[in-house]
Amino acid sequence: MSAVSEIALGGGQMPPLRIAMLIHPMMTLLDMAGPQSALGMHGETYLVWKDREPVLTDSGITIMPTHTFDDYPRDLDVLFAPGGFGTSDWLEDEEVIGFLAEAGKDAKYITSVCSGSLLLAAAGLLDGYRAGTHWAARGALAAMGVEVGEERVVIDRNRMTGGGVTAGIDFGLTLLAELRGEAVAKATTLAMEYDPDPPFKGGTPASAEPEILAMVKQMTGEMDSSTMDIAQRIAESRSQ
Image 1 (tube, rainbow, N blue to C red):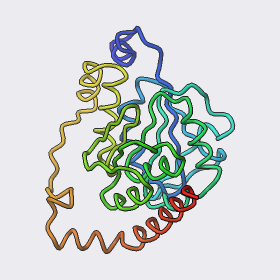
Image 2: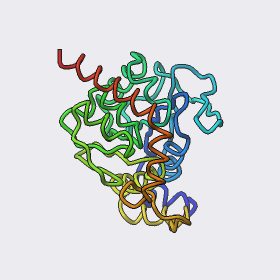
Image 3: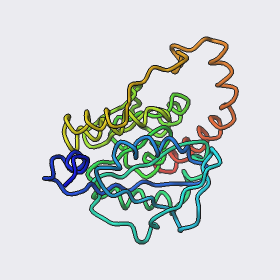
């Protein structure tokens, strides 16, 4: 066995992880690609959608599903949902929410990055749990009855949820440490050369310049308003 394989399988003693990642039209590519870069060498990744047609992300890049809601492998180690500008389109989609609810019944870890946590909440998978999301979606997540954490990675028992977009790498490495141990996570960090030093500071609302924050809020305003309306409607329907 090669040295890379030894690291990937935790010294060759563990079976590959079984990781199902929901993909959906207009998802944010990095929401999925970041975690998959950290977790992918340690297991089998299943990219799951309604059918096997190419899925267009909000960056204009398409992804090919490997499995459908009918044929994905069960007994998952990880169930994962990404977010992005298309999230609100799927919050009330019975097939998408049904898949998450069903797969979440026996997945060891139920996870998300960015506004993917809204999808988990819509499926009832965050009832009684604390979770994180992109800062612009925190209001919508709270409206769905979820206690919202502002950490870059929020952990509550077997629910692990990341903040927005780039937090997916931190999330993936944190989850990997839970699943394979700290040494494997550290080795993967080095293999990925993950040593962030952003060229511009201000990646959170608290650290951003006021005019930059106002600009981004204006960009996301319509999406945030639409998502909030849907979140409130889902919360009301579930309370009846």
